[in-house]
Length: 175
Image (cartoon, rainbow, N blue to C red; front, top):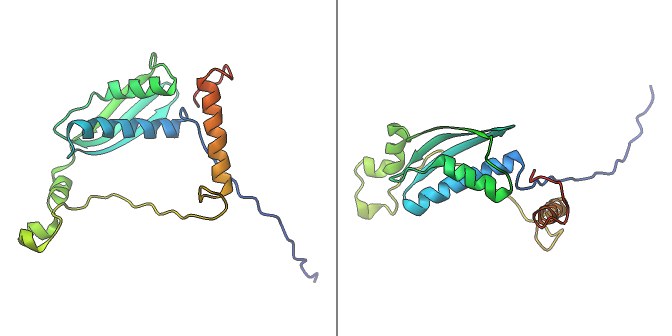
């Protein structure tokens, strides 16, 4: 039997960044813009929108519970324009409804309040939905306290976007 030689391999860490027209980023911007217009009109709005973008089609789905009813198509068109796309020829559809009464009831009023705990015994009466908490970390590789591949990828994308927006580089699209 041959003994295995230990192989020392160099490790390379990479990162990815995308421009504002990338479908994932575009979808995030649309969802953010829908939330923003709702909160501007009704600070108590609850918005849980998912957005799907594929060639020539944008679909917005989810729940909006608000006294304000946003014009979702107008929001989508504005984001597309802001990014550098035309909404002409883009098929858009929405599947948006109010939050279910069961979830709304749990979020509107905390368990403690529903169980009759007096107002002066608890500080917060709003219940919790199904929101996640993201946790990251800092490192000392860069002054931004982010890993170098992330900093470089983001810098390249920012510069590429600036070159496209200023027409310094012609013919490139937002994605």
